[in-house]
Length: 114
Image 1 (cartoon, rainbow, N blue to C red):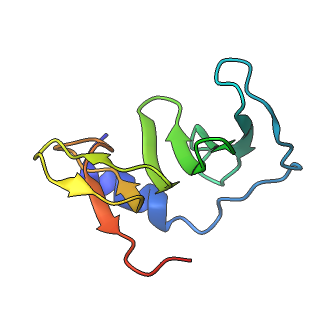
Image 2 (cartoon, rainbow, N blue to C red; image 1 turned 60 degrees about the horizontal axis):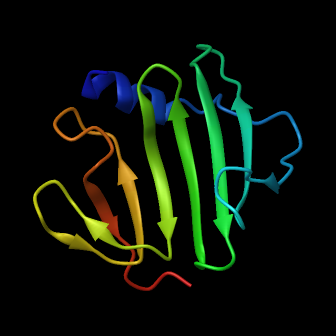
C-alpha cells in the first residue's frame, strides 16, 4: 500500500461499524477473548476491526486491519516491544502504517494514557 493510499483511507469519514461487537473466547490464545467486525465505507475498503484482551497478561489491542495488507493502525496496551530500528516502545503505544515499516514501527508512545 502506498503511503498516500493509507492517508486517504485513514481520512475517510464514511467508515463505520454496523453490527454489534461481541467478545468471544479466543480458542488459540487461552484465556484471551476477541472480537472481529467488518468496517463499512463508501469506497468499500476491505477493512475489519479486531480486538483482543488477555486478562491474565493484562494486554489489550484494538487493530484496524486491511484484508489485503494486514494491520494498518492499532492501539496496544500492556505490552512493550522493540521497533525495527531497535528502539523500545512502552506498554501503551499506537502503530500506524508506513511504507518503510508497514505497521511495525511504533509511531506514538502514549505517555499519560489512562
